[in-house]
Amino acid sequence: QVQLVESGGGLVQPGGSLRLSCAASRIISRFYVMAWYRQAPGKERELVASITSDGVTYYADSVKGRSTISRDNAKNTVYLQMNSLNADDTAVYYCNTPSRSFPWGQGTQVTVSS
Image (tube, rainbow, N blue to C red; front, side):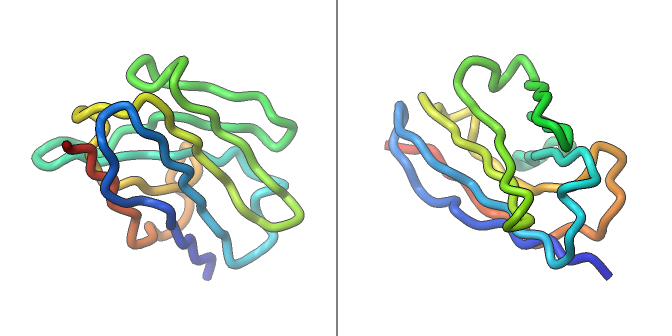
């Protein structure tokens, strides 16, 4: 069973930055498109960024220009660098494939507040 472990969240002031990490328990990231999702209170989980095995990226309009998704296949880890954070970015962040192939991890909480 593949396990996904997200980390790197926290409390940050508006305009700040965070780097989220997603570690996979098996060598999967080399062969899968990986994605970051987020779920704000009372809202559905939404995909915010994805990256193919050879580095082609996609960003939702809500994070485009402020975020960078990357991956380290040797470490089975996917990252999401988020800059210029605002209150709308407050959510629990998760990783998975775009087809949600794997069990969800516990996520990492990002709270943007002054």
